[in-house]
Amino acid sequence: MSRVAFHRPVRALPPAVPDQRVALPAVPKDQQGVGTSSSMMALMLPLMSSITMAAYMISYGRPLLIVVGVVFVIGSIGAGLIMRHQVRKGARKNRTRQRRRFQDYLAEVRQAARQVAARQRFAAAWTHPSPERLWAIAARRRRVWERRASDPDFLWVRLGLGRGQLATPIQLASRQDPLADYDEEIMAATQRLVA
Image (cartoon, rainbow, N blue to C red; front, side, top):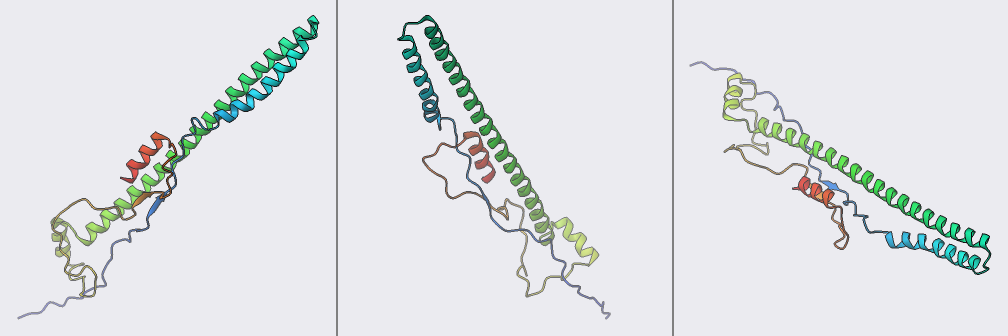
C-alpha cells in the first residue's frame, strides 16, 4: 500500500463582487407647460403699457404722434414675440440638455451593471464550476479539497444554471412625486434599467 502526499494550499477565492445598492436620482420633470402663464404675463404687461401709451399719443390727434404711437405698438408686439420665442427656445434647449445628461448617466449605470454582472458570473463560475471545468480542476489537482468545514459554501452543490439577481440592485429614488409629470421617454428608460 502506498500513500500519496498531498499538500492542501490556501483557498484561492474568486474576485469580490460589490453588493451596494445603486439608487438612481429622481427622473427629471417634464417642463412642457411649466412657466408659460408666468412668462406670458411678463410679456403682456409691457405690451399693455405700450398700447396705453400709444393710445395716449393718438388721443392728441397729431399725425407725428399717431405714427410714433403705431410704430411703438408694432415694435413692442415684435419685441414680445421675439422674447417669447427666445424663452421657448431656451426652455427647449434646457430640456434637451437635461434629458441628454440623464440618458448619459443611465448609460453609465447600465455599463457599470453589466460589469458587475460579468464579475458576478465569473465569481459564480469560479465557486461553482461547470461539470466540464470541474473535471479540469480535478485533473490539475490545484483546487482539489480547497473548501474547509469552516467555509460558508462548504458542501454546496451546483444543480444547474438559472437567472439570478444583480449583486448591486438598481432602484429608483424613493421620493417620486405622484402628482408631477415626468419626461415619459426618460421614465421608460429608467424603468427598463431598474427592471
